[in-house]
Image (cartoon, rainbow, N blue to C red; front, top):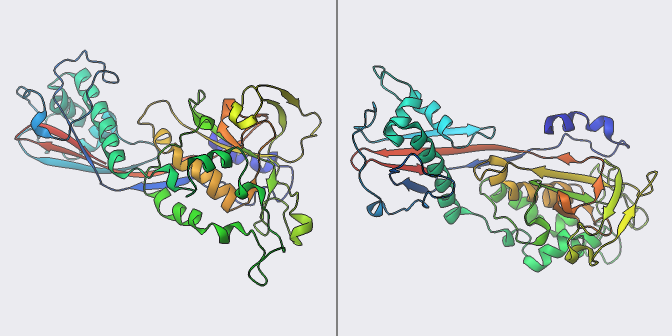
Length: 378
């Protein structure tokens, strides 16, 4: 769906300056940073998503020793490192695929069978449950040590962040102007100059660390596993997006973003009361009476290990603060709705652009033959 939306953008946009460049995918590259080890699973009937214990990093506290294995690699220590892209991440299937290439030539079976023997003592259900638990807890161990806190993104704190995502704060309310400028031949309120840390975070932490998910009602319990932002104003000139232009105090005072959607209605009961500041209400927009509106979002899978799920906070930063604010200058919310929020809390629109995550991840599977402990590095 993302690819289809991207391909039809030039057809759906209503003005030439809406979108002069193809939407960027948010890219990530993670290195080997943390470890989790898997205790022996005694029963194939365990529900690995609910009853498997969080992996303990102290191998001395693990459970009973497993029985006799018949794996080709069981008698030696080894590690299996692999780098994956395109949302493949860590799973039983991916581990088995890369393990196949490491097996001795005289091994009578492939990596799938080897993994069943190593992780499940011959029981495929146990092995698959073990792989999911190992991948999940390896990821959690990575987050314990390396997650980038969301409250460091804007630098203003959670209350300010909430106001920003509702369409308020000076980031949304200012526009480029010749008034009160401090540098000759440079306009005041030039966002790229006043908030250079947004680009610095994009080029560093956003592409190398998983971000913590923001804690605010705008993004709580997204039932459709998707977030959308809708902007109605443009604060920044000379970026080939929107119609803010020189002279600033004539053309940026009430400038419009590139129009990429039709705003149909706003159901204020869907918006959180802290965003709309009313308990309910409804606004209809007929015959393009709403004016230019630009909407852009992101979506993710339900499973904790889904790549888009694990990096949804990075993608939110990219869409809302870097790509549309820093790069294009898009600001302000549709009245009666937050500027960004879960899709079901946002205005009713005809369409939205979407950004996906392009990932490069390195995972390392470690087997200790002496203790028969399985570890996963991320």
